[in-house]
Image 1 (spheres, one colour):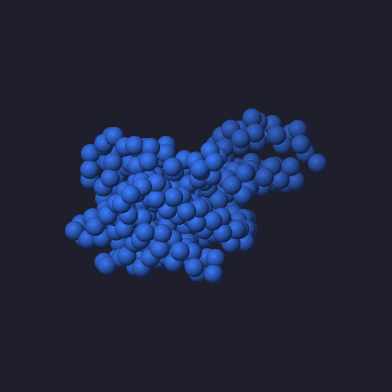
Image 2 (tube, rainbow, N blue to C red):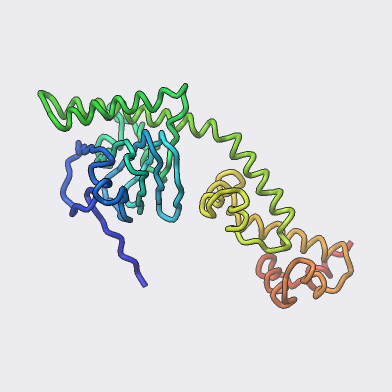
Length: 291
């Protein structure tokens, strides 16, 4: 059954044509306060949305990932990403919406300076850079809002300049967050390998490994793909297959016994697993690789 996700220009508003310099800004409370501080699942086409939270907490859904975050933070929502929010009452922050084909797409000199904000959805901590990142970004958002609410001469140009400065600070915050998480990511991947080594024969699903690491399954898969070069599930299957090869080569136990030792409840299932991954039946592999 297909699930219909509402597509809005802004929250709860029908699609409208937007200019290449389209900018809209409002406080989080403007819409969420009247909705029990909750914005239901929806998607925006052609718009980059940036959510900034400076006090309180936010539970954020981005496609299939849902997690609670502490402020200060920024949420990057590229066009087409399904999202929803649940805020703590009285949460302070802003929602900035930009035409993704306009100023959010390239810098003033024509380079794709801000393309980092148009890839995957992301949540960026604003705690870094001496803890002044959130203060500087909030100051720019307040200036953008003031100009948006009471435009003066050359207002659009001023808003564009302010937004460009904001995007530069956000790109810097994201790069800083990525550099500070490299060490943590390396530790997570090392712990993941240790868990796989301990539990591969128990056939743990990816969700169980993720829970042990306090991650979502999709987050673990992304980290594994980025840092190891394969999905989390592929890594677990590779380790199981390695052990199967070892046992077939270096032991003389019957294949049915090896299947049970490797956590398979049915030797026939083990034989299918092995052949699907190697192209050979276990007996054929053993005959051609005995030491």
